[in-house]
Image (cartoon, one colour):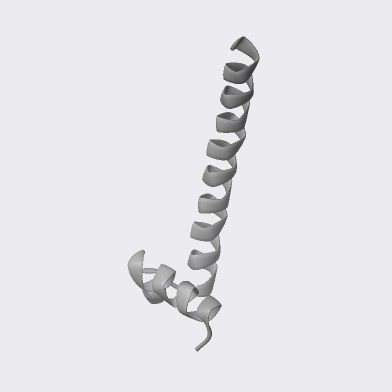
Length: 54
């Protein structure tokens, strides 16, 4: 197992994804990606506005 495979395994075990079907795992990962995009996008917008004020 290399470093990347170990991180994927740890992610699957931590969130219990190993017991889901492939399509359920895919839906969960899509949801995680969308939520992370939302957080980073709005965080960047807030940080840019914060820097523009000061």
